[in-house]
Length: 227
Image (cartoon, rainbow, N blue to C red):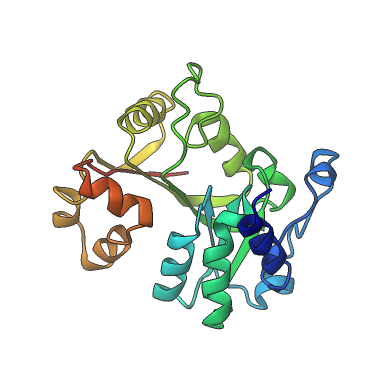
């Protein structure tokens, strides 16, 4: 265990907006904050957006800055990753941000139907060896889980550098007849020129690794469906 990870894990425990239930309890079926995020965590009834597989939590924090009238929760299994977003939001006194440590296959242990308004899936692991796609968190198996916590008409957004994940996810969405609102294989070369100013601002949020991939000449892809 690296000292850096241990330090971050310990610091996460001091943040009142970081929630880390034990994985075994969740595996055993325990529910956590389910139905209580508005009242007990945020103290308001504002819409909730999830960033699933949030990594450093960069989208969570940036969206929360742009939309103080909304609530944002970054979710990831690796607490030392989202430590950066948790620390930044804590230092800035952001009251519309929280972080949750769990595996996404248990996401329904944490939210009731209609508790969430929007989901972001930012640079998810493409799982190249997963031929069936059952582990890809952008796919239909996971969307079925997400539908159990989303309000009707909610949005699911996928931003990725992976051609494999983009093409597979798009094809799955088309096959399942989801309402595909946006489909772009080149966010910064095409899409940002075709959307309104608000959407441009959202798409122009760039994570640390996204900036590196852009420097390498990779194109960023984006999908948005409505559930």
